[in-house]
Length: 594
Image (cartoon, rainbow, N blue to C red; front, side, top):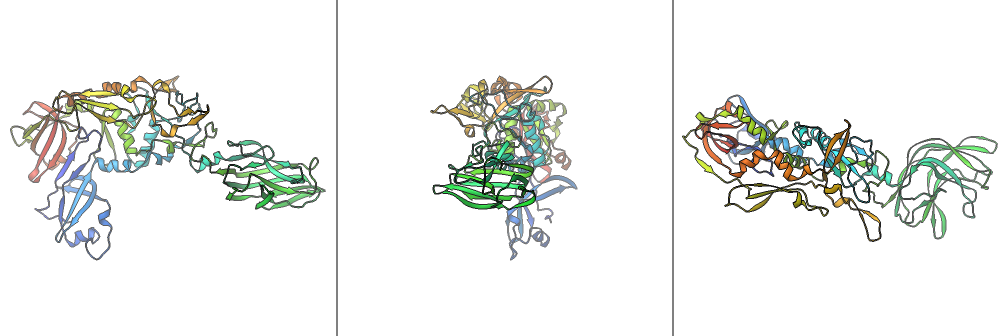
């Protein structure tokens, strides 16, 4: 786009995530940038303000800004206003670009995490069973934070996050999450219903069904709600609708007296007796020898049927004039891709306890109901670190220990300061109190204040205390999470949907086996002692300086907010908290003393 030479002032504001606001994500931005309303610029913004209908103002746009031939930013541009002769934009870059996909993506979109059993199998190294009592001696599912981070990076197109799964700077210990919900999906619903294993047949007797042959389950499969009895009768007395999914082929061979009918039909029992509901498929005769017939059935049905008027159903295959002994049937050549009966409504949004299929529990749907960005922030808090991105894709994870160590490569800005002394000195850090508490999420089964940590300041003029950090994670002291609770009738009820995800500590045993439990190291007091020493020193008696500097385009191009600057005027090292460029190569800086 065209710039107005000598008039267009692009004022750049560089902001460090370090100590700006512990609970927020900050990014670099510009003040309002005014450009001339030339024909070229009008075309670039889609002729906004003319008779042409344009959605340009309602979208983010990529922007690159170069000064003296050097690229200083690549980020997003937002159109703010259009006047008779000018257009006004605001540009943002850095963390906001990197964080946009993270905060726009829910953890429950990470389908790459796949499925597992519920509870997980002991042999499942990725979704192991935590050594935690979920209530009633039951177990559940745990997932590696490492796997979640890997899925986030692949989904959101960012890098540099993997170390956040580690409780310590070195060692093989890892964070896990104990998943407490059991949300399901359409695949889960099939496991809620009746799943036929190997088909069998049953010859019915009695006045109503004499001579009829019905379909039953011979062996295998599953029937968690007990809908199907040994004769193939389907109990729908507590069901409003039934979804039938049968697809494939099979054959039935039987001795026939009189072939009255050999279609695959569905019948239902009302108070008035049995009645025909619908055809599933036709049966065809493929061979016969004397009175021995072989029929082939090729059902292809996926239909939801109103069964509210029926107490029972049966699937019939053959009607003969005679039945009983000597007219038994056998099933062969079974090749079925679907063979489900799913009752509705059931608890179809929940995965069943003791479900043995590896395909039943969708990990992604049972992660915390927060964004990937919020998840990352929770992990950063545990390690006293900040995520910093210069290119909008690759993250640097910066600890205060690293910031302190970076003094060895600090840049000397002594000669760049325009005055002999800083223009302002402050001793207050926004958001801090005399006592700054770090806490886990609240839960009924533990007192989160017993596991809190605190950082103290030495300033009597500020608030007495503040909840400085509140995690979305819970912990499980005594290795107990009441996912299952006993009711007044002495039965176990599932209560996991109201429990926050619990943070666990895992360490290796026997090289490959991980023991995943609660550990006192997870207390906030332990986390602060390990990761927050340098941070605590800074906020105890904070010193913030403001000064004016002369910075070249190269200084801005090479600016790294994780590298301290040194000022001989004060004899101290400082972190750059905020830098605002002005015309003439001058910039205002806000610095925090290390």
